[in-house]
Length: 320
Image 1: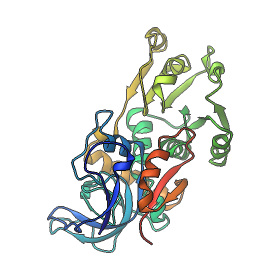
Image 2: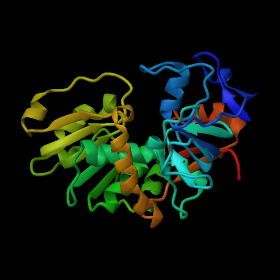
Image 3: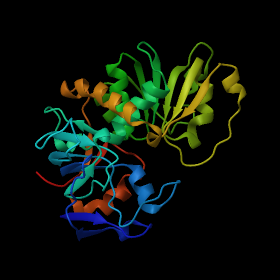
Image 4: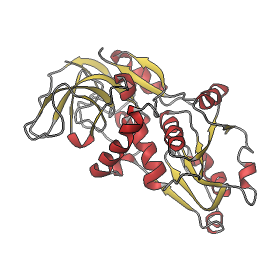
């Protein structure tokens, strides 16, 4: 089979298309013919060996993907050959024609969702669900700010929050991003490049119940001043350090929480998958695909996923 691989940590020029042996499913594993693979920032961190991530070599990038089950181990009960699935945390990497999966991180893909769309679900929608409900304890009727909402996780947050009855306000940094969020039904879109973009929510009597923060090293200090009493900030993304005044938390009985998908247990992942299924089947959740690449274009996708001004998901289209 064909797979993109690297043999040491480093830049994208170390990724090459190789012919490798097709893996075989062990007793508790699933073998999937990958139709499409998702590309997320964490894939680049693992490839480069930065931000406390590392890889085992030879390394095939990619946690997310979607495809068709071709074989299951004798101890696998919930899947069979021919099933349509999406997945995350692959055992062998999703940027390949076949991948080995753990049943605990494999989920049924509704017929209403294409394989390319399915490749957008693992990290983005699981992260969004965990941020909103697992960590943020979002409740219907609350006001949530998705701060940096045009990337894969941000759009997933917008869709999940709206489907759950929250009042959604979202930020973008470009005209194209603002237009995308309005297409997603966001009634109030703000431009986070404006230094005063949170000013109206920093006034007494205003404030967000919950903020999902995609770039905490830039925004966290302002976020704290824009919280309602007992407000919460969930940090999903961060690329540096920032100084805050803890009195902004004390004055509001507010809290800041971090989250990382690697901390989510298998039972929690299964519960999130079960929560997402009916919303996907009814297309209340619809992944937005910005760009589709060939398998050999994975290095470019790794560069593009880190560029500012994200407008949805990046997908490696592997097979029809």
